[in-house]
Image (cartoon, rainbow, N blue to C red):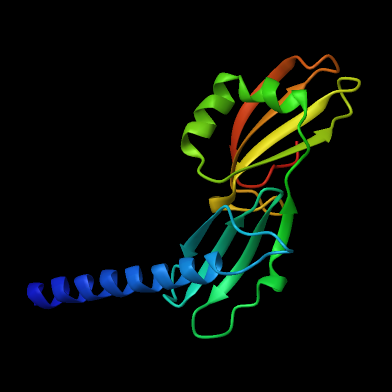
Length: 165
């Protein structure tokens, strides 16, 4: 019985590796809104080895698409998340210990900047790991509130969506 279990596990893992390579090759071989991928990730569905979450990074955006290896793959159906323009607020947040630690872990960081009501002319800088969510449904992320002068006032890590206060 133990040998059967080991053989099954070996077969499953080998099959999963082959399917992962196929998913990565599908993602790498496409053009996304006239842009070629810089890098891709295929993240497995927990239940179905033929379903993968495709994550494609280009110079200007991330494309996220569910990929079913049993069907046709259409990269035009991907959800696109545009990267922000360069901003001094990004660099100020990047230099904090919270963001440095987060960026050591994050393999697919997605940055976003938004205004905050307080302080006046302040900004919220967030970076999330696209492996664990999207800007629409964030998973693991770090955030910083900056003053109107670009000083970092607070930082923190978060797992999951923000909870109302």
